[in-house]
Image (cartoon, rainbow, N blue to C red; front, side, top):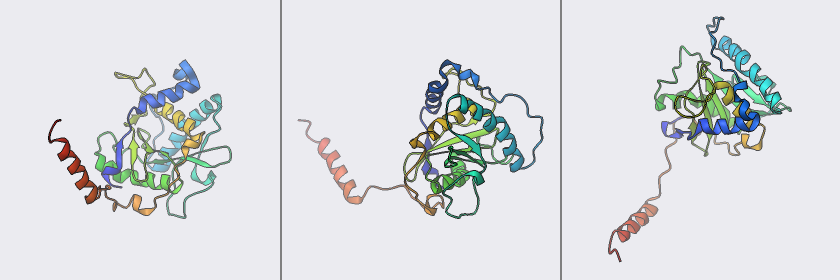
Length: 240
């Protein structure tokens, strides 16, 4: 995926907090942060995602139930629909009560991907895999995680995606502003809220060109550009 296809997700934390407040009100603190030190060693992506499933997905399923959200977590094989027969599948999905896929997540080991100190150009390359899964399944939202760090994506056009700030697994849900922020688990509650509505779906599938690096930003036609320049020239003339 090309660098220009990623843009900032404005007010991400405020958007998440507004959504979780609608579920929990002033009880946002009911979502515990993952701040304890892991005692189980992992050496591959499968082991890492198993810990993620236990400490994020399992915990948040109980919160989803409390909020009346019919969303569960699972591996790709429990989902129904999409995929287009391509090699490779998402590491984690959010499904509705009919096993329809609502959100996809891709996991990588934290010792191979440093999201916080990466450039947008590098992240665009890494996130291409997640974007391909989102496109294949007509989804508006996705998550790319190393467990230690996570980025959330929202599709805002056929070819562009908003990316959240990097969310650390140790960040606690606190008051927005200053050093405050939303926790990883709170972000997943936000995903579940959206996944329980029709907003989870993006209607267009772009295909292979979306992530193969061949796309270029759309340019205004030369005829339109001439007209715009002419208008500017007229506006800069007699101030009457």
